[in-house]
Image (cartoon, rainbow, N blue to C red; front, side, top):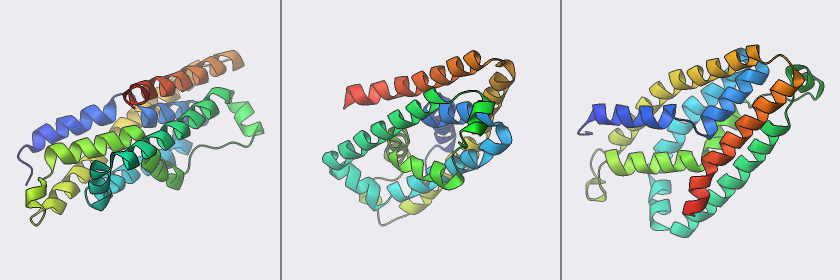
Length: 204
């Protein structure tokens, strides 16, 4: 089993609670659409990321670690997709404009699938597996138990942290009264998404 579950919990909390693409998207969505309509997005991340992590603990993680070009291509695709998301957030207007344009928050499935092209999600998943799962020499043992435990802890921590970010977004939404304020808020969220990409792009 994992030698230090407490250490893993701290790691999961630090990764889940700090600003990143998922949290910024949830915050912006709650500000525009409200908390209730953002819940599918929240649950899509809460279940989608642990599912991706669990699969990354097997052949996918092994492939990424063994093949840097594949990992690099995935990072590029993720960065491009998040730039598109940032643009979508930046051009969104006030709630009445959102309704007029018939736009909507991300669905459960879209949020879950987004984890597969989210470079931060991949970095967290691979780091968690490398730090807290058993090494290659023990692959015949209980590796799947370690990976499953990591995934479950992430799921338990992701839900309250994402709801907190949604509450922050909803609170900001109630303070934004004018179209100009909403546009400035949306552009600020888009800028934070882009800033979250800079370390990944610089590293690449």
